[in-house]
Image 1 (cartoon, rainbow, N blue to C red):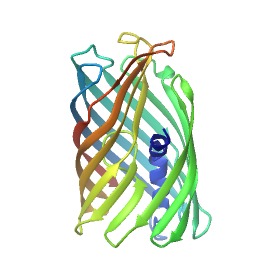
Image 2 (cartoon, one colour):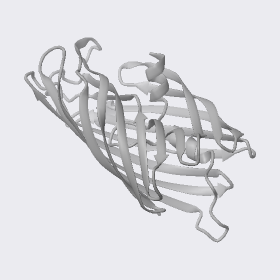
Image 3 (cartoon, rainbow, N blue to C red):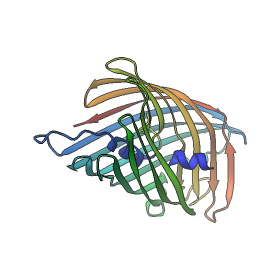
Image 4 (cartoon, one colour):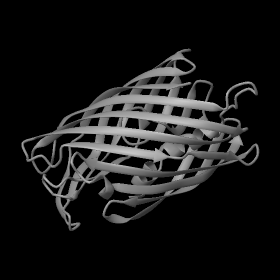
Length: 300
């Protein structure tokens, strides 16, 4: 699906590139180093599966990042992201149990001039059920593209993503970046979404007050991981996909820290299991599932 591939492209690289479109550089006396710490929790409530039974999931996420500014709108960084997904199945045998995901990335941005900026994000990820072989769970990817300043209020840019998949073909997809300041208080952009799950998406932000921001967002989520040798499909592959739509409220404690609360519905969800021979042995859609959560973001 072209839409899902496009939304999937809105990953941390897109966030990083979007920020690079307008990021002001620190004063000459300021440290060239920036550190970030993010944490989040999400609970997705129990929802029925078309093939019978139901499931819910609790997700937690922690991310650390460091960035070295090399000059005006030029930097290189290192990021480490950890996600934990605790599934509970009801009415059917458990397809899998707890899943961990680690992602290591090297975000790079480079301004060519006042109008054009380049970005790239090579990354390595390991996603696996507890007890699975980590060495059999590793994939890699590269996102790269450019952003163009159409005006002081509009930045847009194309790009390309390439990623390997567990027991699947190489995935190549387009990237679209946009940062549009519609008014003094309203902004549409691709960038970091709220939550404790995979990747950013498209977000409409409204600055309701000096310290309060309200958000309406959506993204495509895909989690594909190695299964252990004791469960439903020993040494196979599990996959969860879906499109959450959410409303969020963010309170800005300071220039360097903020807390967000959010709630929404996840649509178009499905679960899939492949055995160790690559054959699909389970595939079921899921009813729309409500979710809620919170996230904390800080930099120093």
